[in-house]
Image 1 (cartoon, one colour):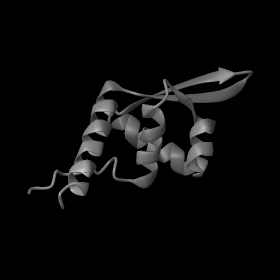
Image 2: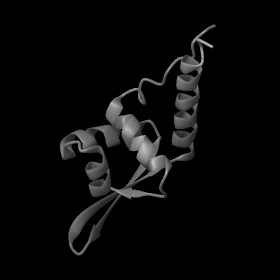
Image 3: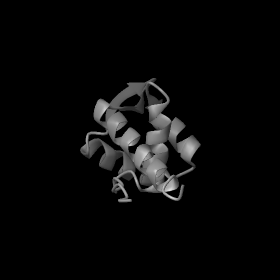
Length: 97
């Protein structure tokens, strides 16, 4: 059996966690992502940029009550990449059967 290649962008624990959050919600604020992943703001910011550069997520910057607000949402390309990644992992897990 030939193993499917894994998307190196999604193979990072934090990027995979971010995508897992975004796949289940319409959008998520930066603070929510930070709370759920328990990662530092700087690390999340870097990983969000990488996902956005790949076209997997969209980042919207705005203001709420004079405070900056960053909101993220997954794109159609991101959904496809996430589903392909999950299917690849499932094929690894079922290879021994």
